[in-house]
Length: 114
Image (cartoon, rainbow, N blue to C red):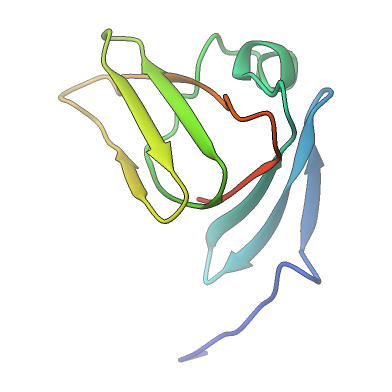
């Protein structure tokens, strides 16, 4: 198929976080795109680590914050502040990937696409 259109209003999968939100997943040509809703208090260590079984996010990705803001603490000590309208790229810095430990600091809900 040369072109494909999907919507987060009808996701292929919904992945609930442990306590604070969820990620809607759509598959486009073998690539998964996520829309995450991160409720106040969301932290990787509390909401995803019990599901993923890793101490930090291990995936390289692009992300676009639709609303709210987040802080990402990389395992190498780098901190990123990302707000609505900004795009992030978490990439491999040599091998292995430098994992990240994100958390959302707003008191309000945040939404991001990855």
